Image 1 (spheres, rainbow, N blue to C red):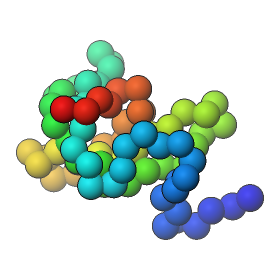
Image 2 (spheres, rainbow, N blue to C red; image 1 turned 180 degrees about the horizontal axis):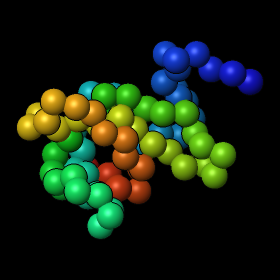
Image 3 (cartoon, helix red, strand yellow; image 1 turned 135 degrees about the vertical axis):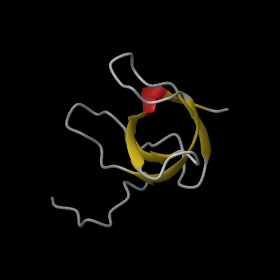
Image 4 (cartoon, rainbow, N blue to C red; image 1 turned 180 degrees about the vertical axis):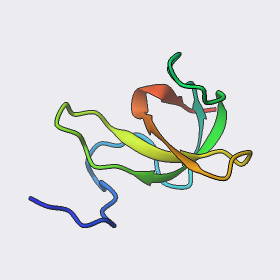
Amino acid sequence: MSFGAGWQGANMGHKFSVGQDVYYKPPVKHSAAPGIYKIVGTLPVESEGRLAYRIKSAAETFERTADESELTLP
């Protein structure tokens, strides 16, 4: 099954919703600053069953990708 570029992974078990604020704690290997980010999109479920999101900090001009395990409610 193929999904178009606009597919947002709806109803696939994502814990957080687009527009929601979350606290991002990046893995040690990343240089990203921990803090409050906004969910701007959900990504399709990967073959390993991992759930991921597009997130954005108000302090940055770009989006990041984050696994659900790296996010909590603020």
